[in-house]
Length: 151
Image 1 (cartoon, rainbow, N blue to C red):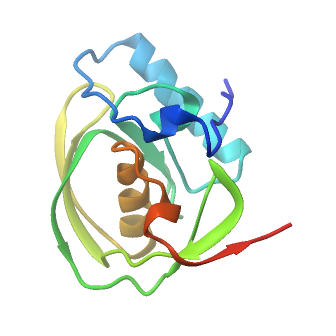
Image 2 (cartoon, rainbow, N blue to C red; image 1 turned 135 degrees about the vertical axis):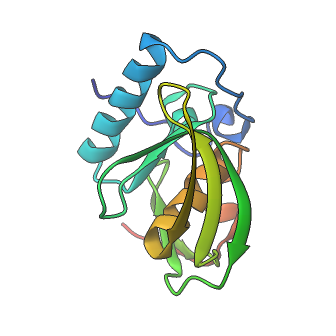
Image 3 (cartoon, rainbow, N blue to C red; image 1 turned 180 degrees about the vertical axis):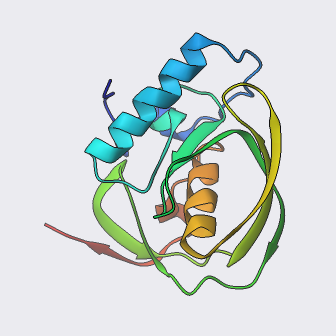
């Protein structure tokens, strides 16, 4: 089920999301709804806070299929990502240049609570970092240079 995406200016986007402690059908429904919402909005990622839920959860699809992250942690970063331009479903019609790492080593849980480790690179690393920032109330425009407005 598609959910409403919260837009820049709504104070909920600036709040810090809480750890997920219950891995149940409600969490599974939230993740499924986030995936539907992201695809319908033609996005590459979506965090729970962007649909008004202050939980440390996000989904990304950077061209390699959907990936779900619950309670994500960045353990290590390396390199400078060549992809500079960034946008956000919560900040429509604005794009900016954000420097992100080329590689991130992360730990996270899946929707069932199982722990995972992964190394993400390129666009996937950029999307992960962007969505992870949302969980701490940070928008890409806070880090961006040369912001451009379209429309």
